[in-house]
Image (tube, rainbow, N blue to C red; front, top):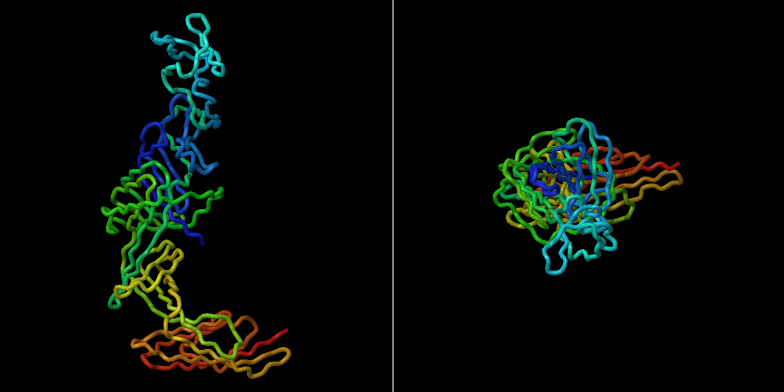
Length: 419
């Protein structure tokens, strides 16, 4: 499942001509901007700034209003002077005071002054305003009804986020803390009086051109995980709400805490493989930590610190609180499992093997060892000498806790039938 998280923020929008309260829904690779607007006069125009337009996801723009008649995408003005064709400007001729002039043809610089025609360059023109000038493509809606309040919404690649975790283990007590790394790739600043992280899968059908991540980072010291509350499930998404203001600076990564909880950890040294008829193998055991908390955990990288030392990192998928998260930290340094295979019988349509395992715990502490093999199809198990043996679909698992210097001897016999 692709991991996606949303952040809902009430912020000051600078995509419109004046500052307005906006809501941002921030996901891993994009954000939804929801800006409150007021409609008057039967028509509403929106021209995104260059920075907004650079990250705008095509086809995502909507005006939420019940009586929309049509939407037109108007191209940018060909030139500043061309936007004033047929309108009056001020024209500076020589050292005289500027005079009123009507723009007749912008392409050749033709003006009408007091019933006479004169050619002049655009550098001599003083523009009374920029009304009607489109510096970028402009979206224009016509609507019915009395107008009033509406929402302008669109998706942008400018904002994204990713979670990261630290699992701290000391004296058999464990704690999990998490930070949300929020990336603002735009030149705009967002000031959010409140925020919420929402975990879940959201599919977006759009071209993903990506963007460069900034090189700087800002850490919000004032925000603490005590100000974050899990708000439950809505529409298949999990929500974490912030109670304190959030500021997302331009071209900056801002990190905010969102989880700080006690955890339980089961350490296992694991062998997991498919059936292999090789006569002898010496196999390093994998260090696996099974993590469980009372929080829903969005997927991310977990750094594990045990007794003050980093013992590894692992990537965790989206993990509901009802299930343990499995973290694989790589091979154990010194414990090796010896696996031997004896061919008992091999016929045209069947084969029988005896598989044996041996391992000595050379550590000064007890370890839990788990053996798992996927045997495939059309097999029969017998003579299983495996501790806590459990048959599963396609194979088996076995688990044992070995005290220091204790030795494991285990085996099973498997028969395969061939068509």
